[in-house]
Length: 314
Image (cartoon, rainbow, N blue to C red; front, side):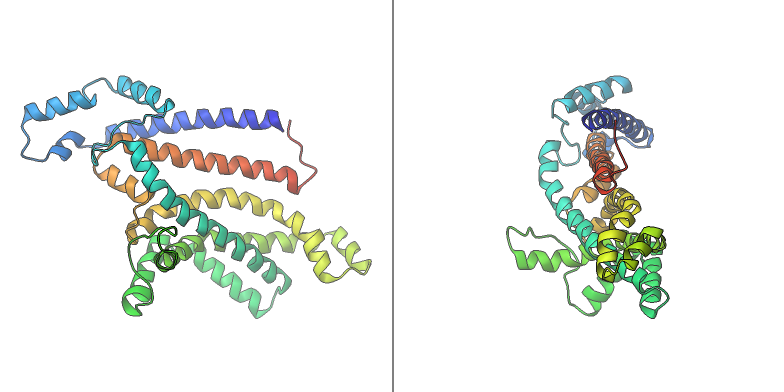
């Protein structure tokens, strides 16, 4: 197991390097000058050139990347052009917000998605099964940004039940934080929840047809014990795979949710940095996001070994 983890960590480092290089090249291919955007139309050519030199943007592209990479390894991600602030300070303020919204949505998707899929499998062919299946298909098909706009209109503007924008930390005011975060968390979780419910239903239907399930029933075990102790563990193997994919989906969806609800998280920071051509901020945010997704996939692979004893890592 230790050898496997070390090997995967080394692969993660390589992936992060490739991702950072790819994003760096893409950002430099986009039209526009970040310094000109920052200084405005009234700035003279001399002022623009002076600022470009101060920021190191006059250097060759490969030199700019190497300089950033060396500093990034040391924890220095540079200074934001748009915000005129150290990027690590920006990340320190924005990351906890995105973590709160994303982690809450992820937990909600697990707590509701897996039981819903199990219940649909138990009630196969009933109206309950049809309702859960149709709802899951709807959640998978509808884009998260459309759900966000619909939620703002219906629950915020039309009914007035919940705030439509802003964020309050749960450590400052828990009640207000719940009111402002409830709709973003629920809407962000729907896609992953629906996928998880559908996958759990399919996996459980496949498992309960196996011979060992019939054997357990023939021994007189209660249906609940057969389902929870024998069927669920084997049915969770493909579901665990969805957890890694769901994490990536939540990260992507948070960009739209934070924009719609005006939440000052990592997703909104990246969008603003892209429009402002703030190279260093975009590279840093993407690097962190890629690292989180890679770490999530590593944990999923490790979880396989605990769920299925037949899996052994070398």
